[in-house]
Length: 465
Figure 1 (tube, one colour):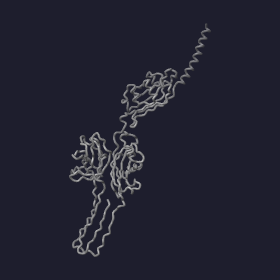
Figure 2 (tube, rainbow, N blue to C red):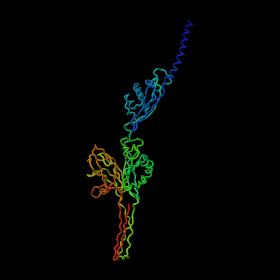
Figure 3 (cartoon, rainbow, N blue to C red):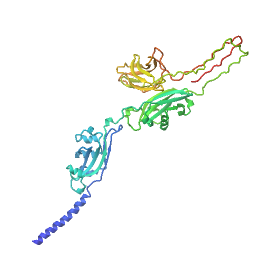
Figure 4 (spheres, rainbow, N blue to C red):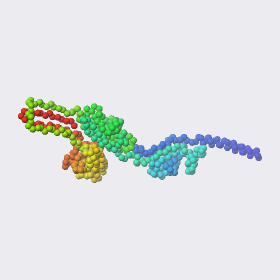
C-alpha cells in the first residue's frame, strides 16, 4: 500500500515537470511583432486627422485591441469587430474611430491624443509579467501593449488661413530716364513668400525669389530695365509688374490660387495668389534734350531805351498728379475692394466716394509721402453697372482723381484684379482715366524788342521729363 502511494506521487511530480516547460515555451512563441502606428493631424490641403496602423500579423488581427486616450479622460476601447476592420484597411480617421463608440470628435480637438495597440492573450499562453498593469487596473486583463503614439487632432474646418496676405501698393514712375518701381505695404513676416512677375510684349519673366527678397529687404524699389535682358528691345511697349504671394506652407485653400498657366512663365507657378499689379510704358533714355545753334545777327542790335526784364530764375516744380489703383476692376455689392493711392499731400485727409450718386466709402489720412491703402466694402444695394471710385479732398470738397469700377449682379463672377493709373479730376466734373507719367514742360525765353537793326533769334529747347 505504501509502495503504491509513493509511485503515484512520483508520477504526478514527473507530469508537473513536463507541463511547466511546455507553458514556458508557448509564452515565447505567441506574441506578434509590434506594428507601426502613425498619427497625422489635419492640414489645410489634407483636412483629416488620420490613424495609420501597418505591419499587423494577419493571424493575430482578432486578438488586437485599439485603445484611445484623450487628455486625462478615461480610455476608449474600440469594439473588437471595428478594430479588425480598421486594421485590415490600415488607415482610418480619428473621427471614424470615435464615431463607432458614439463619441463626437469635436469635443477632443486641440487635446493630447494617445493611440495604443494591444494584444489580448485570449488563450493565456503568455507570461503574466507581460500584461499591462494599467489595463489590469481597469479590469482589462491579459492586455499586452505592442505600440503607442501621441498627436493633437485639430478641427479640419478651421485649418485653412482665411485672412488674405497683406496687399502691397505698386507704383511706377520715371526717375532719371529709367522706370522705377516702388513696392510698399507688404507683410515683413512673409517677405520670403512674395514674388514679382514682369510681363512685356506677351512674354512673362518671374523674378528669382532671392532677388525679390533682396529688393524688399532694401526698401522695395528697383529699376525695371535692370530686370529685363535687352531692355532696349522693349522701348515704347507696355510692361506689367504683378506681385504674387507664394503659399509655400500650404496655409490657404486651393481656390485662392490663380491658374498656374495664367502666370504665363515658362515654368508653371503653383500656389500663387495674385495681390497687386501696375502697368507702365518703357521709354528710351537716349532720347534726351537737343539744342539748336542760334543765328548770329549781321549787325549789332541797338541798345533798347529801357532795361529788359530779366527772366525768372525760380525753378519750375512739375505738378505731381495723384495716382489711384484698385485690386480689381469688377466686383459685386458687399464685396471688398482694396483702394491704394499716391501723389497726394502729406498727411492729408481724403474722402473715398462711389459715384455717380455720391456714396461714402471711407475716410483716410495719407502718409508723410502722400500714399494710402485701405480696404472698403461696396455698399449693399449698389446698382449693377459702371461706377467711379472718386477721391475728394475733405478740406475743400474738391474731386482729385477717379477710377472706374464695375459692379456686377450678385450671380456674376468678378473680373480679375487690375490696376490702372488715373489723372486728377477737373473742377465740377468726375475725373477721367489717363496714363501715368510726367508732362513735358516747355521753357520759353522772353524776347527782347529790337529797335531798328534786325533781331536776335532765340534757340528752342526741349526737356525730357
